[in-house]
Amino acid sequence: MTPDTSPDTSPDTSPARLGDAGLLEPALRAEVREWIAANRIEGLDPGGAHEPYDHEKTATEVEWIGRLRAGRWLCLSWPPRYGGRGLTGVQCAVVNEEFARAGLPRPHLGMGETLLAPAVLAYGTDEQRQRILPRILSGDDVYCQGFSEPDAGSDLASLRTQGVVDGDEVVITGQKVWTSGAHHANMIFTLCRTNPDAPRHRGISYVLVPMADNGVEVRPLRQMAGAFGFNQVFFAGARAPLDNVIGGLDNGWRVAMTTLGAERGGNATTQHLGYDRELGSLIELARASGRISDPILRQRLARAFIDVRLMEYAGLRLLTAMSHGDEPGPAASVDKLFWSEYHRRFGELAMDVTGTAATVRPDGPGYEISPFQRVFLESRARCIARGSSEVQRNVIAERVLGLPRD
Ligand SMILES: Cc1cc2nc3c(=O)[nH]c(=O)nc-3n(C[C@H](O)[C@H](O)[C@H](O)COP(=O)(O)OP(=O)(O)OC[C@H]3O[C@@H](n4cnc5c(N)ncnc54)[C@H](O)[C@@H]3O)c2cc1C
Image (tube, rainbow, N blue to C red):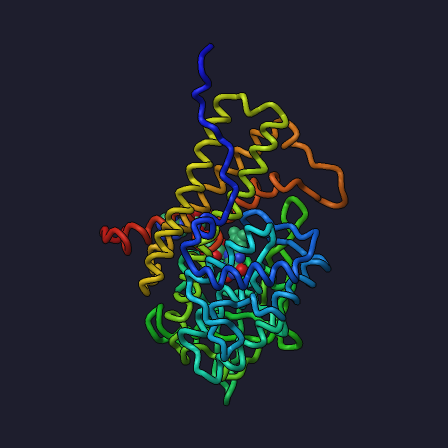
């Protein structure tokens, strides 16, 4: 009998390899495990690689976030005086691994935590940090990102939304688009041109604008499949105190680059955990349907497995760099390009493994689609969101490899 030399495509779904080796932060690991044992809630979905764009939090998820808040397991890297634990990147990764090992999500508090806070920590005054960060942590302020405009996406510096200083306020007029989650937010961090005579990248300010009763209109953009996660936002003389300008008037471009860096780098060190889970369920589906015996699908599953391992090892390299005090910088574009293109291929693979059922909407209310159908659709959008693949390649060419500008 010919031995089966085909690759075993079973993923090693044990996420906490470092923990198994006991290499890093044993005291912190023990603290997380103890807390989880005392506080865990059943029925929580650890989630795949990305939360769906239009996900509405369930009561259980809201309760879980409340417990994490009380246990101080949110906003881990923030300095303790703003409500965080002051954890290093390595320590944050360790905490995330422990939650993943327990099959539990460790949610973040949206764009306020992931995109705005790094900019406020880097460029805000101490008064701004003390005022802004605790309100994100408490959930009193939920932020959305108002950067893109109808004619300013990849070329963000061509933005036209106007900001005029009036006494101790900025008055904002203009239009933003693709504003994810604006319908759930009460605050928007936005870019406006406060000095039209300055060169393109100067004269832009980064402003936090209250959205209620303030001349800010949110219009949902409903997608073909019925769901909506993003919006158009219109500013008609919306007012924000000058105290809400981060990094100083006309100096918003540098601040925005910190937000975009955080957006591209994301959670590079632990993101493979979600991809591992997703791939594991696809392999289970392939086994259950017998499609695992199709050599071409096996090959593609094996490639997906290798890609996730590459993400894992790249994450470990980044951890090592971070533990020596290095920041990812423009190399974050390599990570964004890799995970988004991987996920697009994965979505296509998931449809092929699902077979003809992939073309049919499952029974359910509204425009319900299956998790894999959702990955297929949303993964394409993620190759555009946060800077398109083409733009990431330009950044890598020019700022990582030092090639001439196009
Ligand atoms: C799902 C989703 C969520 C989003 N959420 C938000 C949000 O919350 N807040 C926000 O502000 N924005 C958001 N965006 C907008 C996103 O940042 C922009 O869509 C993105 O920056 C691209 O801009 P654009 O859509 O104007 O396309 P364009 O910039 O017009 O690009 C069109 C095409 O040209 C290509 N291209 C452009 N410039 C170059 C170049 N120099 N070289 C080679 N090719 C180029 C692009 O890759 C793309 O294929 C979101 C987008 C998506 C898809």
